[in-house]
Length: 373
Image 1 (cartoon, rainbow, N blue to C red):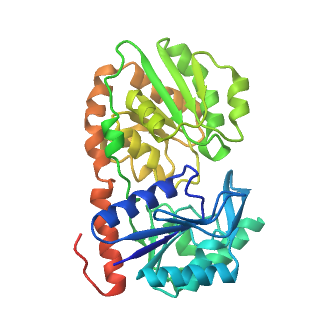
Image 2 (cartoon, rainbow, N blue to C red):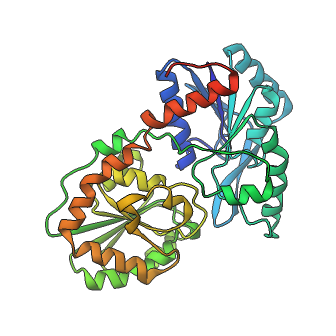
């Protein structure tokens, strides 16, 4: 079969959705099921096809719910040309990611007139929310999702709110399909007598950077050999630099190789995002690299940190609890090493070699076929 992945975000911008789409598409193609990715260009970027990625339309950035994302659309003529190209290629099914993000991904699905699978990557706002963006998302979800052959969520985090919006809509839980091999290969011997902490990601309110800034002085006082590296860009980067906290470093957003090297040397990865997470991609990557994530117990993160790793979660928004959990780990090197040794095996369950066949099976069910993985 031939799969089209319609993504509302620029594929060159770092993000969990982009990584999932790229890794799943590569796995599908390697297993005999070619995949094409269609996305908007970067704002003021160029359109066109390069490799398996086609960029179409125009995009600009919009902020909502403590983060930023593209809003994009394409002209009817460009959409018709895209549809002709993809039908000529032999497209069988279109997988739309975050379909209500205006407007491109759903434009592509409507124009192609193929069976549609949709993934709800984001945790939806509460139905009582009154903001313009919230009202748009609720209306778009109610209009779009019932038209899809299958609806996927990456964890049970969005299910409650989906049920309130569309009580009769069935949704299937499928974690993102990520190639964790490069992260596992990045694991390196940890430095003896020192404690390396890393916070990696976009520096924005949704990721809990302010909570980390409050927690670090407590950690630094209790663990004199600990060092914190904050790696990323975003609206709170200035606040990170202005805080001038002891024994900290701030790095700009690293590329994939540098990010893997950071996690591969880290003892502890901090993920204090208090809300808005429907999965914990950074947690799976950290575990694969042999690092222990200390994370806020939001529902998405709780879907990754299960079993003995559930003890690594703290109440969302609680800087003192975050500091306390890190301090306890820092003072228990034997317990930390024992748990870290189990981390790669736990992460493997989220890898593309496990999850890829599940996506392939779902596509086959929609098309009435049973493709071999």
